[in-house]
Amino acid sequence: MFQYINATPLPDSVSGNTFFWKWDSINPGSKYYINIETQCMAGVNQLGLPFSHTCFFDVVDDYDTPNNYDIRNGIITGAFDPNIKSVEPIGLDEQHYIPETTRLEYYVEFQNTGTDTAFNIMINDELDADLDITTLKFMGSSHPCSYSLLDRTLQFHFKNILLPDSNKNYKKSIGYLVYSIKPRPSPKGTKITNTASIFLILIRRS
Image (cartoon, rainbow, N blue to C red; front, side):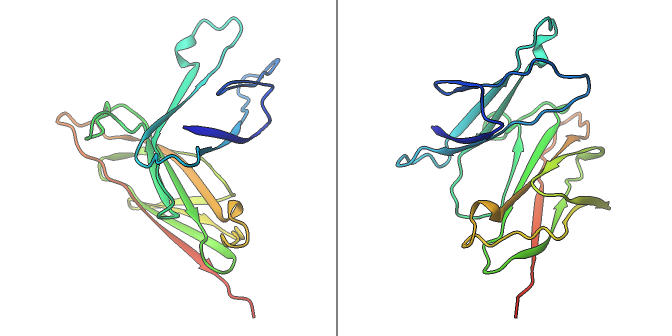
């Protein structure tokens, strides 16, 4: 349901819908990032359909293979609202059941759909009472940002982000952040809700 647009770094080889990258060596503790841009195939109504991307790491002389793959599941959404918040894993059935020990990875995407540059952006994320704050882990963001925790409100600050409006540069008008957190243990199970509010501060030029 997806077509490839671009990747950084470019893949070493491509076979159908599978892309390959190769490193001769990686030092212990080193990190490497691959950013892949895709889009839904045009002309097909796919809103609401689930998708799944799989990444597999083949390491020579690695005998601990269960941690060598990752699956990203999601639901295809349309551009009705420029701000998106999603969680991985999405869970099972309509109730989205997950084991209580599962780490939840939240993705928050924002966009400047105004008529001028957004100089500063603040995101307030109200953490559910059944999330364990001590397990909070910031995973990364599209632009440099800082974050703080006030009671159960997680605040992200993008200072001097200079996010252009979508009419001038659609791709660069979009930003995102990713963090993960674990639920609190619950013998009876619980429902977790999570809401983020996004504030864009625009400065009008005279």
